[in-house]
Length: 311
Ligand SMILES: [Zn+2]
Image 1 (cartoon, protein in one colour):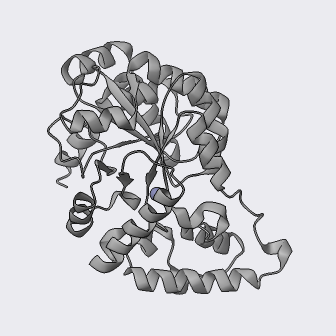
Image 2 (cartoon, rainbow, N blue to C red):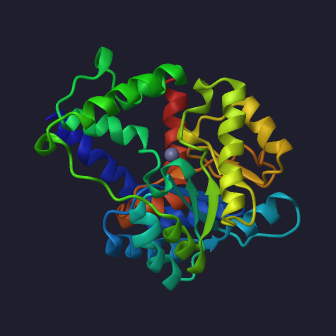
Image 3 (cartoon, protein in one colour):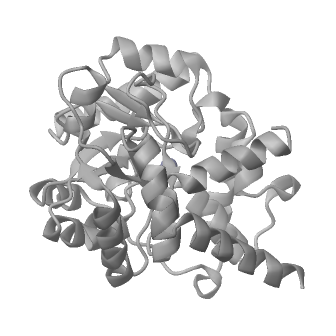
C-alpha cells in the first residue's frame, strides 16, 4: 500500500543517517557549523526529555547570546554547537517543556507573537482548523497552506469571517477551547533560563505583506517585548520561514543580531545573520531521527533530493 511504504521508508533512512557511525563522520566534517533546531509544540514531555538527552549526547547546546557573539565575531562556539528554538509560543513548550530544559541546563529561545499572549488574538491557523473541525465551509476550499499563499489582506478577511461564523456555531459543535500563553508563563520561562525572541506581532507571512505592514509587524512586537523586558538581544524568526529583503533591511537597521529561516541547512560562521538556516524537528522524534537531523545527514539528503528533482 502507498501509505505503508511512505511510512516505512523515512524510518529506514533515519536509521542509516542517524547511525552512530554516520553521525560521527558527519560531525567530523561539519562540526564547526552551528545547528539551529526549530521546534513548535511539545506533546509528550517525557519523550521530549529523552530527545534532549540524545541532542546533548550528540552535540553541545548553546544560548542565543553565545550565537549572537559568535556571529558578531566576539566569541567562539564549541564544535557541534546546537541552538534550540521554539516558534509560536505554544504553552506546551513554554510551560510544560521548560523544566525539562532547565534540568539539563539548556538555554533555549522561544519566538513569540505578542498578539497571541493572553488570548488577545487567536492564532489564525487555529481559527481555520477549528472551523474545519466544526464542519464550516472555507471560501474557495482554502486550507491553511493555500491561505498562506494569499495576499495578507485577503487572508485576514477570510480568517475574520471564519471567526465570526465559528462564534455562531452551536457550542456542542465547536472544538474545545485551547490553552493560551500568558505573560506570567513567559516570565517563568525566563526565570528558568530561557530566552525570548520576536516572531512578528500576529504571524502573517511577510512575503505576502506590503513593506509598511512588514515593518509595522516587526516594530509592534519589539515595542511589546521591550515594554515587558522579556528579551536581552533582538532575535527574530520569520513566520513560515518567509524572509523578504524589506524585512531583513528593517531588522538590520533596528539592530537585530539574528533572524531565522526554515531551510534545513547547517549554519557556517560567515552566514548572513539575518537569514540563518534552521533544522525543523518534531518534539519526541525517534532517537535515530533526532541524531540524523542534529548530525546534518538529514539536511544533506534533503538537499541532494532537491538537486535530483531539480528544485
Ligand atoms: Zn510560526
